[in-house]
Image (cartoon, rainbow, N blue to C red; front, top):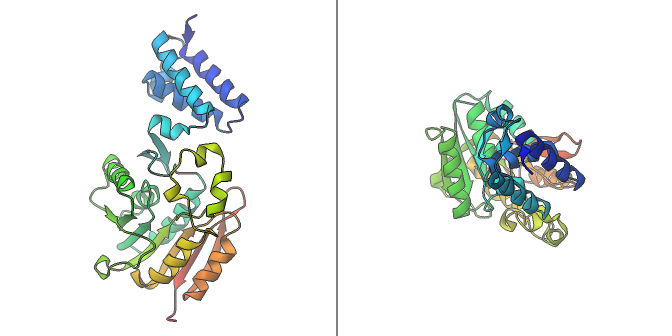
Length: 288
């Protein structure tokens, strides 16, 4: 039986909602748009028209894959972060709303600096650094990422958002000391891998089976990258420069201690929209 685009959307939303998908409205819209080849505006315009059997079948195939755990962002190959459209693949983590808290905090500071250099370390898709560049036009941003495939996504997203003049992707390993040739930065932001290795098998299917473990695994206690960055990357900050971390639930106090032990002061912990401590920040203020 033929079905209108609007009824198809409503049907998909109900199936997702019944399966416990929190963002069922958003995900249903994205799946129907992608499966039918329509923009959001076209879907609304054509809501009373009938979808062809081929387009309906494409949408329903996507829904079945979603219900098995595959995230929508990987199904459609893109996602939005801080108002920016981003290419997404299974080589990078899907940008999350919680990470916008980190971007908010860093942008507010970077806007006070005028011309400056900013490093997004463990950049993944480049979402944080690109958000900063889009909101702080005097900043020059480096996207630091080790994985070749993730760097390819960074390059695509730089071009997609017209930021080639101010954002540069550079291959670097956050667990190694930076080369002197990299220069100094007034601000480093990082959302590093922070899941304890032993916790990964217990993650929900959409994360465990689809998102890259390279971007999840933070070592035995989840703190390997925080140790390395606070210890080895402090020399890449100018005196008084700031370091901003996203942290996992329950990690804020431990990261605070690591930063204090490496000469960072003016330390703050910022909670996310769920009242969970999500961002730890501090300024490099002394030699040790």
